[in-house]
Image: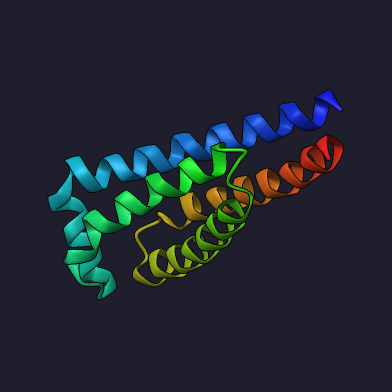
Length: 121
């Protein structure tokens, strides 16, 4: 159904923009992200690998040939967003809302991906 595809592409597109912005911050605003990681109690050496993994996860989400990898990417993003929500909430920086928005977009994308792939099978 056309509506399912529209909802899937809009939600996945918005999620993609959010994650590209996030990865961009990790690459181009390292000092600010480094301070945030230190406040979380996370090691700063994770910043660049995490940014790369976000981009690789997006490639998996958008490639229809990566069915199993796409499932793993959805799962990884799910856990990453839960952890991000609580990490931001615990330090009180107000950024937990972004993680919540990302989670909602991820869930919508996942549900509608299932609907449109079921129709294609």
